Image (cartoon, rainbow, N blue to C red; front, side, top):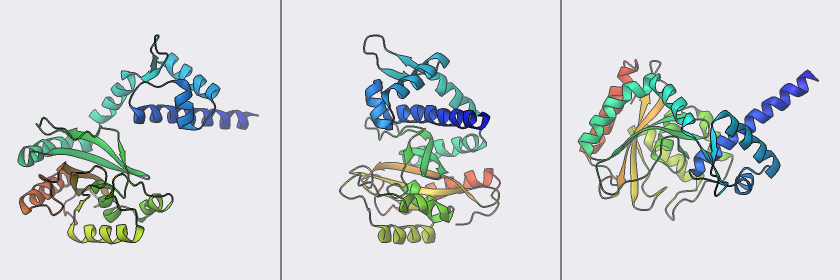
Amino acid sequence: MAGENTSAGIQSLKHAFEVIEKMAAIGEPIGVTELAKALCIPKTRTFRYLRTLKTLGYVSQDSSTEKYRLTLRLFHIGQAVADSTQLLTEARAAMVQLRKETQQTVTLSSIENDGVRVLDIVRAHSPVQIVTRPGALLEFHSSAQGRVALAFGSASLWQAVRDKPMTQWTPHTNTDLATLEAEVAEARERGWATAPEQTLVGVNALAAPIFGANRELIATITVAGSLQHVPARPPEALLASVMQAARRISENLGCTEYPV
């Protein structure tokens, strides 16, 4: 009986976190029915999780629309974690400098089993913004960050690519595995990756790897902008700035010999 209760408790906790992650991904107030459909779980169970999260202060409900949204309590927890993370601390100054040199938005992302997670952003001073939020999970095949992860990270990351169909985000998104493998091999050889119009039409990103003390891939640094400012074939000055930032952060994290 005790084992059954423990298993049920773990399952409930898992579903509660799935509720939080789905609401964060949606990014706007949502009703119980819509959320239940998005999670593919019964409406009654979804309501129960929302009620518990509301009691704990992680979710609030609009009395007029009856829709739910995440509260800032999660933000404060995430900020506390971020403040204690060496990677973010060491990377921030280099990100600001890279934004200054390139005049483009700079992002720092970590590597996860099913994608690349945006940790921090230094936005370009521009009336037109390319919107990527901290916490967003980018797919391996359609992002410059993801291609860097496949090129320099664990071979096991390819499993996430092969386990499901590759999303066709734009008419230009590559969804052919053999082509992706060739592009990743090229990224490994040259030390950086791009993803022109792979996620958004007219937009490109240029990413480089960040290594830790044991020369293991732990993150990526990226500049993103219109194809006009971040061409599919990046100019030498832009490449030099991105690679220098990646090396600087890696050195600050204890990587004495940058592998690329």
